[in-house]
Image 1 (tube, rainbow, N blue to C red):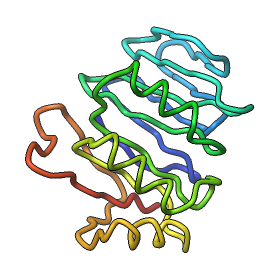
Image 2 (cartoon, helix red, strand yellow):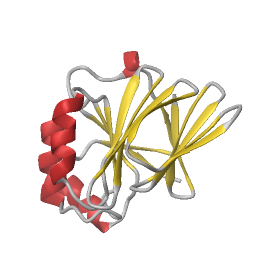
Image 3 (cartoon, rainbow, N blue to C red):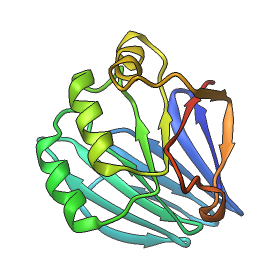
Length: 166
């Protein structure tokens, strides 16, 4: 699966399927047909599993495609997301949109330490995102315009941090 930013939104591509996540709002899946998911629930579209749940007038998304589960936290609140994550289990990738979220750097640090996933993708590079990285003492961040992710390529010994740049 390839992940990149398009017009500020994360876009995931695998084979003939393209998934665009409009953070906190909806997921657009385009293949032979198009599907828009903007309501809580669990959906299966073109080989992509989407679990969305409401968090204070915002949506969080867990996407599973190509054997990898990627979590897109809600932009406005952490409290319900933590409960949902306990039900979900292991997550391979977390997407961090620090600048557009209302979470503090300390909230992000606590959340990412609890999730303890192999890969963290930073989708924004502003001051708030830099504060998150500083709070977590992250110094080894790769900067890429896109990243290819597969279950077998995920690090097993420590978390890898990648900053997506458009």
